[in-house]
Length: 353
Image 1 (cartoon, helix red, strand yellow):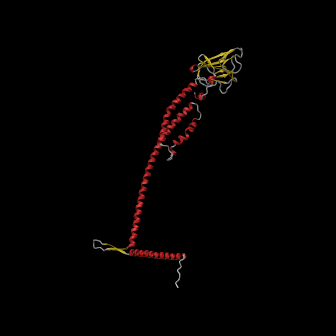
Image 2 (spheres, one colour):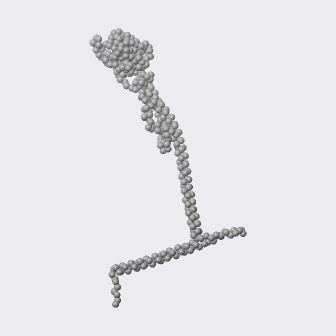
């Protein structure tokens, strides 16, 4: 009886699996044998020896030695590694040396540039010192107090950090061209500042010769009568009051309101009592009346702010006061026009002149 063959899918899959495994095992055995044969041949070749002989031309003994292929390959490999390492180190050394040369050149250039900066800053400091002196002189002429503080606040954030040679750091300096431009700018500013100072001096000389100072020293007083038409306190009639009346106590110092010369000292019992007439430049005259005492003489040169007498009630007077007049030529003008002039030059004129 013939057995029926199993043709089910599972049987066929199992058959294919066994065939695949057999094929893989066969190929692995062949590969393993091939590898084994290769290494066996390499080993055999490596164990082969070469004889190296050194035969001298003389009758000296011949020198020879044997070396295996493995040893020869190892020596060649070692020499190759040494050659590659030597070439790499040489290249690195050459590159490093080039970098050192470049850094040295850059450092030398930086030192030269730094010296140029220092020289330029030294020159700049000289110009700044001159500029500061001229500026202080100008500020002094216009009466600005604390000129030094003004200059320090005005230029301290830019110039003081700029001109300090001792605190120079590489990378913190301005361009040399900027320093030279600034030095040139300051140097070119010196002459205009000098001219401005001359103008201010001339202006101050003009102002101290014009009667703009308050005629009482240390007190303000009360203006009891203004310039212009008014009723006479004794006659009741209308008349031209030629000045202003400033009332205060007897003995208050009276000062001359501008530089000038005492032209006239007079006494009018029915008028201004003890009075002084002072002649100034530019056609100005000032008159001081109802004084208690006069301490200057006719012809004396008087300076602005100088005490010339003391307040009183002499002449035809309603009480202690100063009658103050300003004249230009032969005409009278309102003194308040000049007393209202406000200028720092006027405020400092007493002490400066």
